[in-house]
Amino acid sequence: MHKMRNVSMDERTSGRGSSVSMASLARAIRAVPLEQLVALQQIVETGSFDGAADELRVSQSAVSQRIKALENQVGNIVVRRTKPVQATETGQLLLRLAKQITLAQEEAIHLIAAQGQQGVVNIRIVVNADSLESWVLPALAPVAQGHIALDIRRQDEHVSTRLLRTGEVMAAITADERPVRGCSITRLGAMAYHAVCTPEFRRRWFARGLTREALESAPLVQFDRDDRLQYRFVRRVTKAKIHPPTHYVPTSIGYNDAIALGFGWGLMPDSYARGYPEGRLVRISPEQVLVPLYWQQWRLSSPSLDEVATAIISASGKALVAA
Image 1 (cartoon, rainbow, N blue to C red):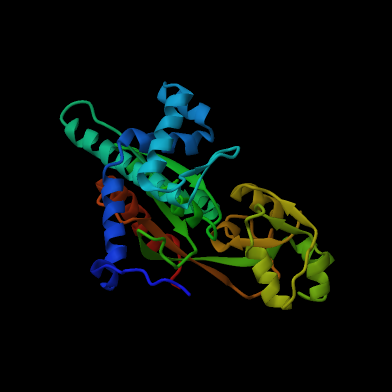
Image 2: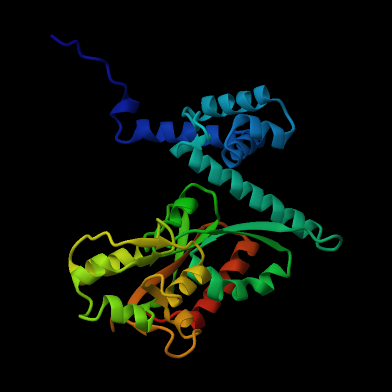
């Protein structure tokens, strides 16, 4: 027979226990010393406790003590002791907090130093390769000539929010329409693609049209292994999962040139295809593939981050198509 436990009035009050726990957690996080968050940031960025110690010019033991104290403070493990060291889910949230504090500090330095030597604010963003190498750099040129130092990461638009979610970047151009927690989202438009190849390649491989057999045999050009755009197109055409011979060329210009040189076929933005001499490339399908793009950024008051966002959003209206 089970004994009945006396239940306090606080525990019987709906939600009261969880709110007390939340309040305790809030107090604990607000009391975390900045040096502990900085230690976490350096560990994740360098991949090791030793690397963080070198960056911070302290002993490895001091870094370990700061992380142990941080984990005791929040009641959760914040890093996995792997090679390289990786942040846990809790660690990723604290890492974003650390970088938001760093951003606020840099902007404060810039504002205070505005009448003297101008400070610099570092803004980290992630952009898909096709956007980066076509319209994003011209859009950010005026921003880069000011007080902002840009750290641009290149990542496929379908996985770029991963860096935003882990706190490695402050904003992302992404194909994901679901906002990352703690971020705002703005629809930019869409990049338009067509499946293209050289006339000789089409005559050799697609003489009978875009059949499943032809797509299974004809060499395909992929940007990298994160690039799934071609496979989604093939799946739409054939209703099957196929594995054609594949060339990987991990730059936008190299990818496009590989197609124009006859390596294989691939989906190319219309703006790039128009840059080749007339007759150099032909379409293997009339179907246009639209990839909607979104701008996601930290929901944080930051004049510098907002300046980058304004430049991107403004340029996207001319560079992208409505979708």
